[in-house]
Image 1 (spheres, rainbow, N blue to C red):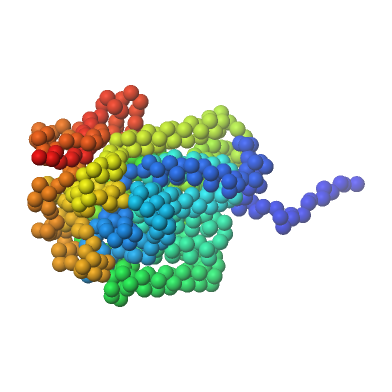
Image 2 (image 1 turned 90 degrees about the vertical axis):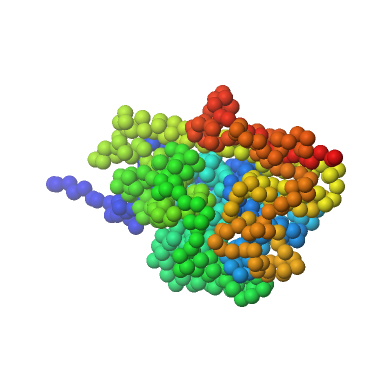
Length: 567
């Protein structure tokens, strides 16, 4: 009698052979299993990111004068009624959102009450708030990666988010592009956690409250979320957008003194009006590729290779992770076509670079697996597994070298201005003068109350400089005649009587000409801190700290705070 083997009926819970799940990962021979099934909890990412963001808040330099004059200075004016105003904040142009500033005043105002005249502490408190936003949003992203793709990929992403130079510096920068970066992390994490409505609402917040131009980077996650649950996602996005736009318009009316929308104004200025951003400098098409390597080193190169490994890793990463990291390519392509380029313009995609690179590293063994016998461990597969921690370590070491070089090479301006608080013997009404170093002014939070004025002196710059907010003309509602949108210098922006200066800030480099502070009969140096001379230092040694060579190979000037000698 013939025996008939009975086949087990496929159960509904069996994973589809065309869909990647953690059961697939657990069955692999490269160390998955129950540990990956559990994934990373909330505590470890939160603590690890919290430690690094605290370090960033307390040691980060200011990388861009736009951060100072368009955000720190207006915030200082809201808190202390003094500060510099740029033409973008003139009510005639109204390009900057006061809603964004008020969001940070929620921390700055209580800190100003708590620390009184210790304004540097208020500055740090706001930075700590920025770091906390970064910690929360990136923790959500890491946990989402862990639940969706396993502990290994999430751990790689966590390490890079913590230590890559780009994320370390951008996380505590007071810039709308940094806020859009927080929103990108959170929206991507919510998308991977299958919360499309919340993801779309966060994306709308990142665009309207943060940086309107980042809408292009949010499109993939937003559109795919709408395709999943259109009604809920659309309502969440629409309601969030309407509320924020209405709130922004009302707040702009309160501060600018007329009905206007800063969100609409900046879009019209840069898009419909053709824009004048080229007035502030242009860069070549490969600027962002060089910049990306400086801030992420090999992590950036691996992120760009994500599409290359996708045919092999499609089962694991398509479509969700592809949707999440696709803004890297969209944003890089779009921004590279723009003539005016700034490092901060890439901030929204910084976390995604870490995610894409982590996916590539995690997939190294898959590149060498036999597609007919994927569970076999050949010599090449074993070598690829060993290569993963080696590459990750290389990325983290290079990142630390970059971070160390920037902090120790360029922190002199902030440290010099802190010394002012120890020289209040100069008396109330002192005047601090700044020449060519105006663009490294760290903000009025570093200016003690006994200094009545910070004035610019003419060192040859012919662009338009910020002016103090003028309360007699209406403060935030003023439209001073000396402002223009053509970057043309005003006759009123410089102090011509140098004898009125009590203090002088200068960078003295090894150049064949004398500076004002070289006159030892007029000025005495009360602070002098080394500052990395970018022009005379080799690019490799100034970009990355190499032990024993960084100090020897680089050239340094002296960043000085000088005090007038009484006659």
